[in-house]
Amino acid sequence: MLERDGSVLITTGPARASDPRLRRAQSLAHASGAALRITRELVRQKLTGQELVARNKLLDPTTADAIATFSKELPTAQNIASIRLIEAQAASAYWSAWRTLPLIFPKKDSPRVPEHWRSFGTRISPLTGSPRLAVTPGCAMMNYLYALLETEATLAARALGLDASIGIFHVDQPNRDSLACDLMEPVRPQVDAYLLDWITTQPLKREWFFEQRNGNARLMASLTEKLSETAPTWGRAVAPVAEWVAQALWSLAGKSTSKEPTLPTRLTQRQEAKAEEIPLSFEKILCPVE
Image (cartoon, rainbow, N blue to C red):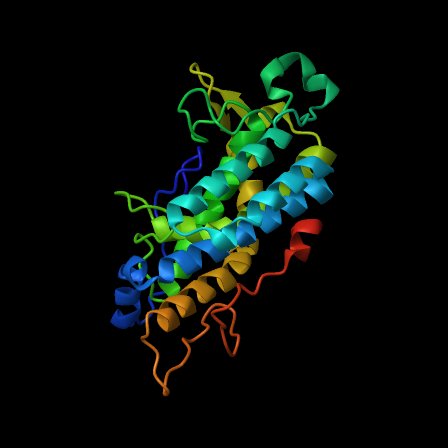
């Protein structure tokens, strides 16, 4: 259940049996070294996806090359703080390429469209200093889609017996499912590609948005319904990421035995989940959501 601004209010899903050894491995991930390994792979996949979006969707080879250069620094990053810095530098280049992206509105709506709504705008809202409380329709839609992805990531973590609130890459915060934020990272470029395809090929209706007195751009129910239809797609996309993280925690923390070398792949029904690389296909970035 989401607020209209994309805030996650509640998630609910099937109850699953949980192995306390897995949750203990998750809690000790930083001490065991699993956290660094997992963080490096999650961010590597995210940057790979952003590079593809920049190169093949935004048609911006300069930005794509810059992201690829940052990605090459990941194997030698010695700690999670260094990986966060690499990710932040890549994000700065990536979102700069989005900033002036024009948004299309029907001619009949043009007189009622504020000037600052005619481009995607900056991902950092002047109201919060963060992506929260977007001031442009494009960023508001992005926030809502990311909230759908966060919800699916939370459900995936819980289905596998992980604690969605204990983060690995994202620091723990009250009232936040930090592990879900971790699991989202490799899938974000797929969400970006979907939104990019929409806003560059189809006009946005003025009636889908309204602006609060403080400048916050909000979504009307008719649009949130359309966006919510994509939730199953993001659930399928995040499933292999969640299974890979669970298996990486299980194996790198030394909890597996000869009788139980792998965890059940409840989400994808794969026979095995190797703890080497997330089994993602970035072909989805290059085509519309089903």
